[in-house]
Length: 248
Image 1 (tube, one colour):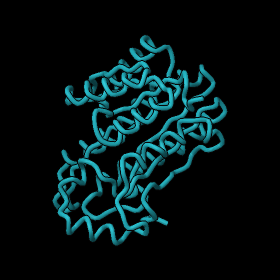
Image 2 (cartoon, rainbow, N blue to C red):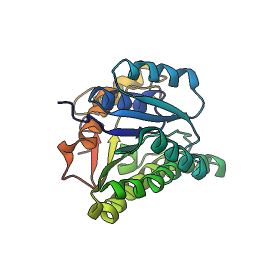
Image 3 (spheres, rainbow, N blue to C red):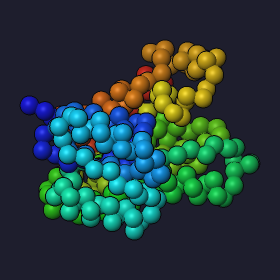
């Protein structure tokens, strides 16, 4: 029996990277998949094709997750197309690193809007639906820098820390309706964001990780599957650091 048979999962920013890996992992366990993307239509269609091959329903929605109106419109369309939403993965995110002394207001606002406001937008849209269903799992894709901070990433760290506070608050507000809210905090993951690092830098960072390796997209997706499924039915308001022991 597949863990998510008959469930519907909505994953934001799933045309590539962690979001794509999560969408595919949930589909492998029987979930029907709705996901959003901003501009990468070709990559989104490739994700659709791969998920369709798994024998579940899937649909991609072009949407700016930072827009309150577009986010709510997507959720309304997902309900029209699929009939329910059991899992929300707030994954949409970008980086724009800079030291505080050099950071512009535009760099700050862009990261907060894309990473944090998007999580609010979709959570705001799905909680009434999950409340009527008397259940649901909300998963915020945070980061270890949202837990510990990081020089040169005050905007990104703040956005990811905000996602943690959001999940913990929703867990307290909506627990009586059977809605769980948790966070995943990935560490150094092999992805597009780390692809441009030199071998020397990657090796140096790997030495700082107790498991002495970068994480994989599969590592993060496995945690998402756990939090999406009934295996975590008594877990809410928590942060799981998927970081190889970088934060202990």
